Image (tube, rainbow, N blue to C red; front, side, top):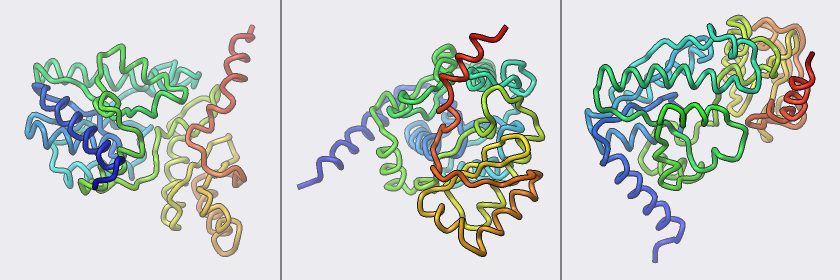
Length: 285
């Protein structure tokens, strides 16, 4: 007898295939993370050459992530394009209010909209949001709704665990990749987003991954780097020789001070201070 969890996943996978097969063409907003990679794999299976993966390229995307997106698209076998996005030119993005993510996604979806209509004619823009993405503070979801972007994984009822399980089954190379996010998410709300800060974060995280650390964020607090690590890596990070190598790697990216957050890695940890940030904004003269 098959496992109930397997039957549920099979049903969701069938629903995903049905949703995608109904589309004339698809443009997948593609970061190379597990969600968009699974969606891209399912889209090319359902639509063949009528599916296109598109990656937005800007200082907000780490160079290593750009290269990985290229590799993953090639492994999946989906046509892949890159487009330059210019969220860094938007005052609302640079000011880094709690609405920053809306500005970034609005920029991306505006460009994907134009591509879908002008170049492809009848394509539908898709993103990799899943059913779990409704829990955190996500202004980017408003941008998706405003542009009519569809989220087939969420529509088919996929949770994050479902996404990883089906991605593993289908051989998607990023099935176990730790969650990633825009580099600007490492900068506290209200602190200006600059290309130099984004470069520092990207360089520090790249060097830490070279040390064998996988689940991590380098949070940018001006001259101070606050490093978040997964629970298994946190204990190792405080022992030599790894401790000294972490300090060297992060200082090499331009930070003056290096701290390790004892609470460890938390996706969206900058949102923990959102009520305070919003109150301060409302009370500003």
